[in-house]
Length: 501
Image (cartoon, rainbow, N blue to C red):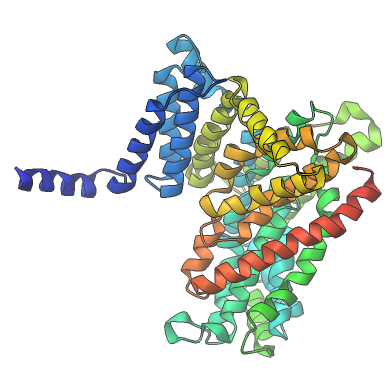
């Protein structure tokens, strides 16, 4: 009997597409939550939705299955359990409602557009150009990688595709060219430094544009929601608010990492030769690359709302509509084809898991769970006797450093940000709402520096073996603290100048 049970478990471990032990832990967690008495202030259905949401987050953290599968599981459970409605038809409609959200389609379409960067080779060309210009010293290569990130960030909402798929291969090629290889024990020669710059440039630029990483539009939505649409971050206002502190972080970051994890090789004249040779091999800019450049310029002009500024509000375009224009332009010019669209798995994967998380966050708000949690958090802070300044700082720090428990930025933002923003606008005086909200916005990407699993880019760069775990966490913590201080001080002054507080 024992052998049959053992054989069955071994079969499921091999054949079933989930990790058995984490799946058991997650299932027991869901059962335990459902057995807990419904907290005062919530309905049984609202508590059931909380249980489903927290279980989904735990499953994502434990990596029971791919995040898309876990999101589909949540959709199925919400549909069957009817925790959001009194009928099966209503529950299914609620479970699928978020797939009509323009913010989700903005991310999906922008990921499809960014495929053209890799297909045409424009992303690699941009990186190599900056290496050729700045690569005579190791720190110059670091700045080249950082500038490459900055140029690509407005058009690549998958920070994983940008940092891990475009910039990281360039970084590894340069490190290998200087015989800096983890397999040989020479990673600290130049590779460790460049890998850390690769990672931290990715997190900094992710916070500088709405379209630089997938969860940013969700942050925009939450900020608008807690302020009753009085504080809405457009593409232009986001970029303007984050311009000065973001650029300051980007300028100081390669210098800071050079102190925290200094490279053994500081002079790298051969990097220029390597980049020049690669550019020569690529040849002149191709027609498809020119189309990509033209499309990016068009997107930038329309996302910045320049036609409306010049000719009146009648020409104001929704960012998602603009993204579709860019995608259509690439398809009809043959820069990418329909097979490219269909085969871009990351875009359709994002549609499923992002849609499911947004759906649950919206339903938690509709059922009063967010208000219930926010009131409890607010009452706890008030009972502690903290002034509003200390309370606001505590909220930002708790939100940022709780990312140690998350392996997905989107999951973290979906789970916690709306509640923290709600508490903040209740405690902070109205005149200082802008300062608090913008610090929370900045923290939503700064927190990606902390761990080797903090965002999709992290495991790609960490997996290359150039940075040891202890160094990653040490540098990540110090950079996180430094960037928070820089945004609070320099960013606070900049936002004051802009009139946001």
